[in-house]
Length: 242
Image (cartoon, rainbow, N blue to C red; front, side, top):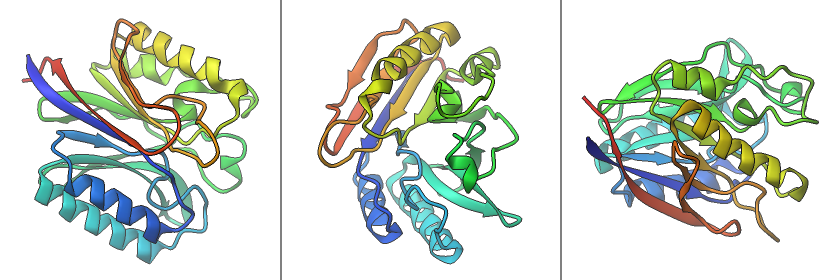
């Protein structure tokens, strides 16, 4: 068993990349965590009009900050490949390298007006830890956000050996979905026998509709941030690593 320090940042996500990158770099540079998770589209803002040049430059800054702070950061960002846009999580390791990416596999109906679904569910390995990434609706497949079948991606990751699922979120404030979001996080952690590290964005004027924190394989919240405002959690998890 080894203690792996997990951290997550619940932060407002601006439509302006310059505002977001300043916050992201601040949190990476001041982190003492092994893994640091940010919300969905936390770098570019949740829209499809991000600029490729500015985004690529921000990725380089994040890579260097991870190398200097010895932190592995999981960044929510928009990206383009072969003229197609995707909602993506990018994993920059503590040596500044790009370990890999996860493209949102189940975009909502609204997402699909701009973004394409990803094509591959991946399990990553770093620091002896096996883990996967999911983005908002990848885990929930929330009713009302598209008539999509639920492929149980969290279950698939657990069956493939993932010990942890990093779940980046930007789910808004509508309280109608709160119970569904919370119960799904708990039940899917239990079903897959994994820790789920979930990090939502924060919003002005009220709480978000899904908590930021960590759920254990037993379905217990081992830490949870207040639902309103900007917050960071840090928690050491004892995990089997090789």
